Image 1 (cartoon, rainbow, N blue to C red):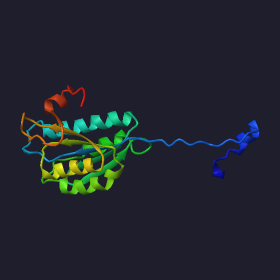
Image 2 (cartoon, rainbow, N blue to C red; image 1 turned 60 degrees about the vertical axis):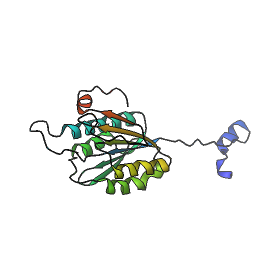
Image 3 (cartoon, rainbow, N blue to C red; image 1 turned 90 degrees about the vertical axis):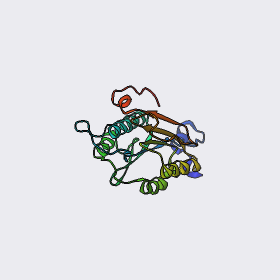
Length: 189
């Protein structure tokens, strides 16, 4: 097309010059943070260590991905569903941390609402990282839908005792204890 001809360059070198454009592509990664505790009793001084560990893990993953120039969509399910896009000229890590700081344990399963919210954005997401405190049909439905839409999946469980969460049959998962996360002993996912 005519709009691609660079007339100034043509004038300088006396030959037609066509501008070439390179489309930039950024990985867009969805991070889903679960806040529904299996055992919601609060420890007097420590709060909810499992939830705190999951929030810390979400913050660390967000920090790493934003630092690698990825765009992240954070979906955090508390009493309401929070969604924030961060990285590459959008919100930055500080806004992610603000959302994570205000999260409280969900009293009922938030995943019917989370599935709706995540479903709206799945077409543009390359990979979905789920940080879960439990596993059920609603969570599995979301991960299945992401796979069906062509998203890669990474399932991370934070569990306070070994075997507390039933292993998903169709997806590989990684498990961490709250102590591993809170003491900084998680080196890779």
